[in-house]
Image 1 (cartoon, rainbow, N blue to C red):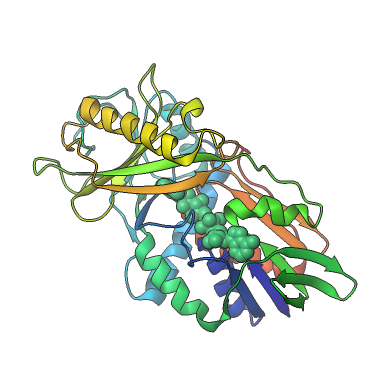
Image 2 (cartoon, rainbow, N blue to C red; image 1 turned 30 degrees about the vertical axis):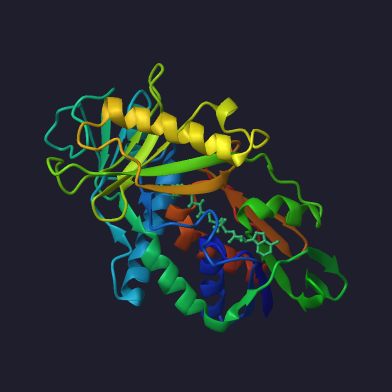
Length: 348
Ligand SMILES: Cc1cc2nc3c(=O)[nH]c(=O)nc-3n(C[C@H](O)[C@H](O)[C@H](O)COP(=O)(O)OP(=O)(O)OC[C@H]3O[C@@H](n4cnc5c(N)ncnc54)[C@H](O)[C@@H]3O)c2cc1C
């Protein structure tokens, strides 16, 4: 079976690898660097912790597949330091973990179960011991090696259903396939519209900023998601390059709107996150030393969404790195058997 995968981010590369293992003849089209857009950078957070039990169960399956990838890659792809979720929703997320049968603890700031860059914060805190740091740098090397010459460096202009199959056009070249999977990140809406599929297309600017970790910080630091409390930012935080603490914040949407432009949005995010670090993270120096930018869809949350029209399958969502191996398997199977996977979790 001949299958086109449009998009060579982590989702597209994972799907390509899973399709190759099923014996398909695959082309993965990527217009830029593989994993160079939303999948860029060195690290992300893995967590079983989610607001809904079905998402916890899917994360457990994804974690098992990460372990298989780690074996094939010959190196650990998730550093299992644990993930902490703190704030008003922590109890609800703990209930979801309990319903899914996932190991967890609920505790308060100051607990010896916590290794965070601050001792005082708005609790309670949910500890997810199976969470940790996803080594994106290692995953990129593993997946690009496994995909090999099935990667085609070209920008896809159109995906169309024709009587002969799915026609994929890139510049002056067209090729026809038995099936196509569109997983082009910020490029998905435009391509999906060509086959009559509407997907959320709103974008905003997002910036993650890295800071030096002070020597007195506990080690190894857990990944940390803080929910917004009053006028304190909601954030995600984790160890990035050695000695670096990466922080992304839910900055005022008015400051990071697409229409407002990238440069002012990056500056506003940098200022908001640096102020948060200065005020709330005593074990981190409020001195920015690294940035990671992406175009983010504010209408999407932790859910996984799938839409099919004929032989074309489209997927979209946010925070997909933690589900990458599971998404790859799911898309490969559905791409081959013509099914549509069930959506999971909320749209936003
Ligand atoms: C700063 C930041 C922090 C994050 N934190 C986390 C986290 O802690 N945990 C987590 O699980 N997730 C996190 N995420 C989200 C996660 O990284 C993304 O959801 C995931 O990487 C998306 O992968 P993707 O393959 O869908 O998209 P992308 O990586 O964007 O891949 C899509 C690819 O399609 C290509 N493309 C687009 N249009 C075309 C076209 N017309 N023709 C050919 N190619 C095309 C693009 O060049 C791109 O490479 C974070 C993201 C960012 C940016």
